[in-house]
Amino acid sequence: MKLFDVYPLYDVTPTKAKGIEVWDDKGEKYLDFYGGHAVISIGHTHPHYVKRIKEQLDNIAFYSNSVQNPLQKELAEKLGRLSGCEDYDLFMCNSGAEANENALKMASFHTGKSKVIAFTNSFHGRTSAAVAATDNPNINAPINKQQEVTFLALNDFDTFEKTIQSNEYCAVIIEAIQGVGGLDEPTTEFFQFIAKKCKEHQVVLIADEVQSGYGRSGRFFAFQHHLDTERSRSVQPDIISIAKGMGNGFPVGGILIHNSFKPSYGLLGTTFGGNHLACTASLAVLEVLEKENLITNAAELGVYFREKASEITEIKNIKGRGLMIGLEFDFEVAPLRKRMIVEQHMFTGSAKNKKLLRFLPALNITKKDIDLFFDGLKKVV
Ligand SMILES: Cc1ncc(COP(=O)(O)O)c(C=O)c1O
Image 1: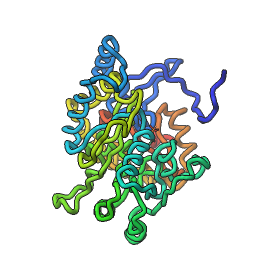
Image 2 (image 1 turned 30 degrees about the vertical axis):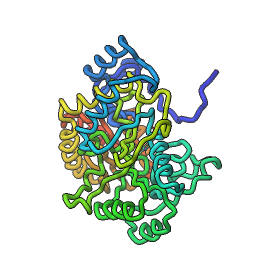
Image 3 (image 1 turned 90 degrees about the vertical axis):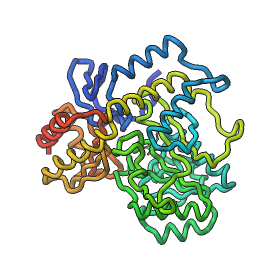
Image 4 (image 1 turned 60 degrees about the vertical axis):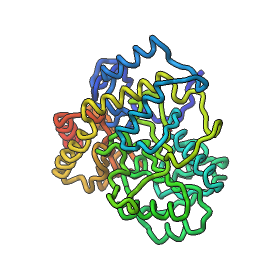
């Protein structure tokens, strides 16, 4: 059997990794400034993470959601505390798409409605409702197109207000910082406006923090950049979806559901979601984030990165926050990315915006690592 050929691959075969360093099968070293699509949050093979998973594997790796699993409760408690989202309940699943699928399903159950508002250039995953809410017709099959999704431009107050007034919508789904789309974000005024309008019209507000969450933006969640001390103005999503950095490579996802939503047996479910290994990987990530102060590091190094980026005249625009950054050039970056890998041995990312180079490293990188990145970038630019 051969592989179903859906990925254009670089000719690199990683066999070992540590921190941001990755070695291929020939022993060549690479620097990972992309974290495998923003997944590596605490660095490859972090010793605490490896130890925790190995120990868990020796005890029990999996049992289904029909028995008590104290690790899930421990994770929910720690996640609530570190994220400042103690008013939410946790439901665990296995990926970002599945998280959004469950979020949209909850919204539909809750309101009895089925239409969704999403935004231009959004990316929410590749399954049923999640892909329908993704602004990319090429990855929506006819079966997905049955979902009714209205795409609106970010920061267009009038159109948003007119659309939500129809009272036909179950959910608004938004990335606080767009990932795949190219690092655009709502203004604070717009985010607060949609939060207010969702409340007014009883529409469920879903913050997709699959990529921007877990400290990447310099706050635990990226929507938290838009909070306000005045409660009526602040942004409080009903549901927050998480994945990617949550497991540092272990496939795990989840949704935080505001505790005003009442659960009932069978409403949501999964075989693998919340298994013992997934919980342990997720706990290890949170323990490292907390102990090593990685969210502060992401915020501080984001500032340092911007300073360095602003010295390069070929960079026309710097987008994003913390260590979720896009560098916009006035040319398409595909050849530049290739040269970064082949000549400089550095992994970077692309976006739907073809002129944007994405920088999504582990949150424990150092200023020295950033200097190395710019040394490499300057050579190829
Ligand atoms: C914001 C956002 N939501 C959802 C997803 C889908 O996650 P997954 O690939 O784990 O299904 C992604 C993946 O890139 C994403 O960036």
